[in-house]
Image (tube, rainbow, N blue to C red; front, side, top):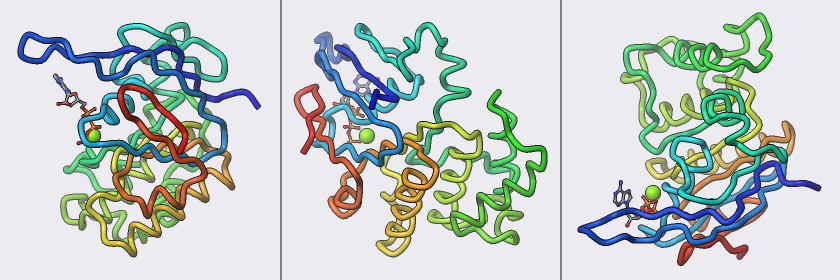
Length: 224
Ligand SMILES: Nc1ncnc2c1ncn2[C@@H]1O[C@H](COP(=O)(O)OP(=O)(O)OP(=O)(O)O)[C@@H](O)[C@H]1O
Ligand SMILES: [Mg+2]
């Protein structure tokens, strides 16, 4: 099976106090379709940096990223972000003056992917799927708990029908029960819908439930 996402000799560093610190060092890795991955690694190892680069929110200094065999530079970063990837941020990044439904509907307008006509129905269905009932979907998101906002962020990330979903510590603020449900959801998205899910986590519990565990350390990814 060919990789949905191929990283080839990725390099990235920051200038810090006049010194350059390498974060990603000739990093190469293949992510397969329909698989739920977790990325573990020490704090400061560069997980968020790597996720930003893979999601097209930041650009590697050198090296190539291929999506379904096509160079992401050829696809164009804007198109790649818009049509190929969904992201769940640790801080949710929901639009707080909209309700949950509107947040999901907005994501549907921000893609060129084919979507069904009955967007509202689908948005409610997605929200129901992540455990947000319609009355909660109609509530302003700042009137919802952290766990509920996180669920909406997940519904939003999948609303554009993208094949690649990234999440940075998506269960960091959740209790273990909610965490389990979110993990089940990721498993289901990979198994049933063939999505590739790449989750950064500190949680060994989360990681144990993923299909593939990957460690980011010393600038490279290795299977564990
Ligand atoms: N804009 C920046 N300028 C300089 N250094 C940065 C910048 N962003 C991140 N760093 C540094 O790069 C390193 C990697 O950061 P990153 O946020 O990717 O780590 P992480 O693995 O996600 O850590 P955590 O597990 O704590 O979230 C850290 O040492 C961080 O301080
Ligand atoms: Mg981080």
